[in-house]
Amino acid sequence: MRDGFGREITYLRMSVTELCNLRCRYCMPAEGVHKRRHEEMLTQEETLLALRVAAELGMRKLRITGGEPLVKRNIVAICEGAAMIPGIEEIGLTTNGTLLPKLAKPLKEAGVSRLNISLDTLDEKKYAWMTRLGSLDMALKGIEAALEAGFARVKLNAVLIGGFNDDEIRPLAQLSARWPVDVRFIELMPMPDGAPFGPEAYIPCDRVVEALPELEPLPGGDGVARLYRLPGGQGRVGLISPLSDNFCGWCNRLRLTADGRVKPCLHSPAEFSIKGLDREGMRRQFLAACAAKPEQHPLLSYAHRSAANRSMNRIGG
Ligand code: SAM
Ligand code: SF4
Image (tube, rainbow, N blue to C red; front, side):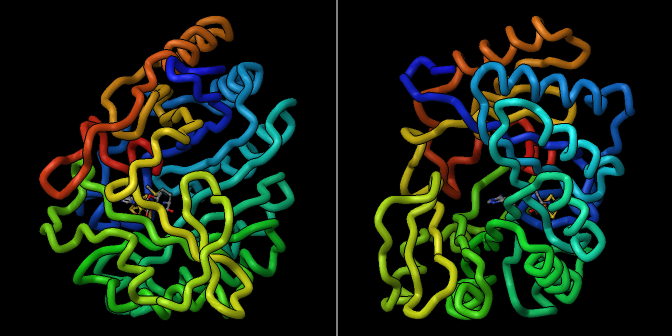
């Protein structure tokens, strides 16, 4: 599938639930989300049919996300089903990590090869404050479980937030020396429903390069990330800059929400529903979403909020 700007669309980010066991301030309101009726959400059969259609249209890479995908009762079965679909070459999953001690091995056995684990701070009190419900210890145990399970690649994602973790750039980056993991810093995006952070919270990824002058740039990139390595590092340090360095020219994604909407862009309100449709209907909606991909998302900054019509947990970050 090619969009109207010649980009080949090969990557599907699929949210399997809007629910989460945490309430990160940049992602969700404190009260969580209103639990939707079962009938409004994609069933396991619809999810796997949608993946089959997406694979037939040329999607090769799948990332499963949420909400928190590991709170989904049938997550292992969904991953197993996805792994059996011809054309899907790689399955990754993004998680807050807290449920990995129980699920890392079954997910690996089901065919997930890559894990992204969110970790914004190494300070227990700050972790508890930002996630409202989580404990740092649970997240660290999850990372250890992921490393023991032997995933092909484990990445730790830290949302860079001025006044919160910009004093932890070095210890977070050093996790790529302590463990064979990539550490990626992501600029905070002004999403709807995220807690109102002030302008000082929106800091560019260049701040990471300033804090770590010894970073060695690596050639090429990894998707939307600029890559570096700390001297002696086992893993890499990645910078993802949706605000300061627009990477839409490289975009190869569509998104599928847990209630069955194909989204052409994270920051657009456009949606194409596949809920209740048969194979041909789903195919048409995927093609329509691909054709509707904008050339790039509008400027994002503290003053310019995302035009997305949903909070991050309801889109799938
Ligand atoms: N629950 C899982 C997790 O936390 O990794 C998966 C879903 S979460 C929405 C996916 C990613 O989006 C996480 O790495 C999270 O930090 C990131 N995220 C959420 N809100 C964000 C925001 N406003 N700006 C930048 N990243 C955000
Ligand atoms: Fe949950 Fe992930 Fe959102 Fe945090 S970022 S509230 S863990 S969905």
